[in-house]
Image (tube, rainbow, N blue to C red; front, side, top):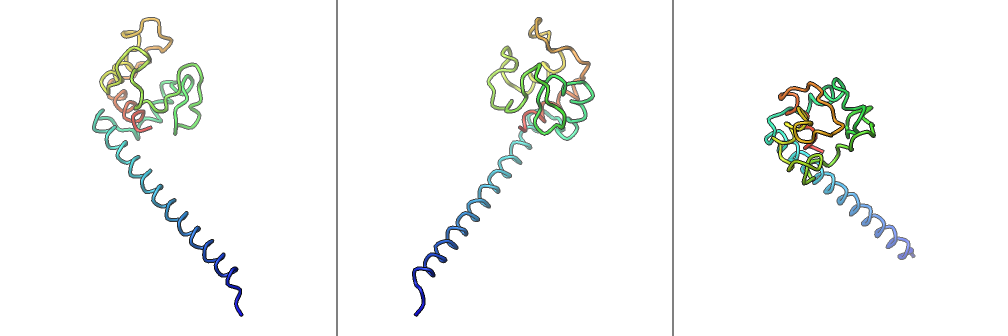
Length: 138
């Protein structure tokens, strides 16, 4: 005579494994969809290309002062971490968080906060658009 409790247990474990697998797939799909929407929104808002940003961050030394998600070696602690910028109300505590303001801050921070520690780096407006697009994707 078959052991029904063992069979029931194996069926329950299989059903749970299937549910976990389905939930994981659903959440992964939702995350990727959300990331794609953020990516496209950032490009539309700024007119920049986030793909060019890691090189720009390194060229101008941003990585020495800021922790920047997705940029290897960007683990500076002088300035704030640049993750989650799209969810912040203000840029550097002084400007409403808009794409135009972020681009202007990146190019000329002293114009908005004369005592800021962030230097004028020489980043031009096209590069600032690329950096803003990248920062809004995270």
